[in-house]
Length: 123
Image (cartoon, rainbow, N blue to C red; front, side, top):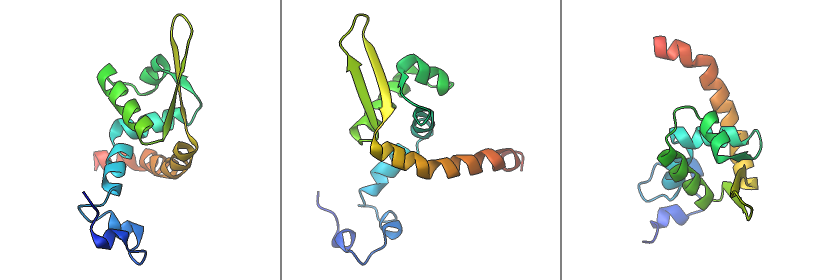
């Protein structure tokens, strides 16, 4: 499926493109801003972690959602999976350069939410 011609125009700001239904950035936005996507990216900003460490970091995540989210973020080039050929198997997850760049942008949002969450939730 090809993108609408307006998506290919250099004159259209990136922020406006995401509003268009055929914009590929909607897919990335969905992956990155999912609850578990944000939490895992922020957790990995603290350094490489194993599966069990990530599961503890993102309290409440199911094994299925952890696996699914990590695969999505890896496929998107934001997370690196390093499977080491040892017994027992060891797999470490870390941010790629692109993932680190993204987390640098996400942190201010997460910090803002942390400051204002209680007031917003308690209205």
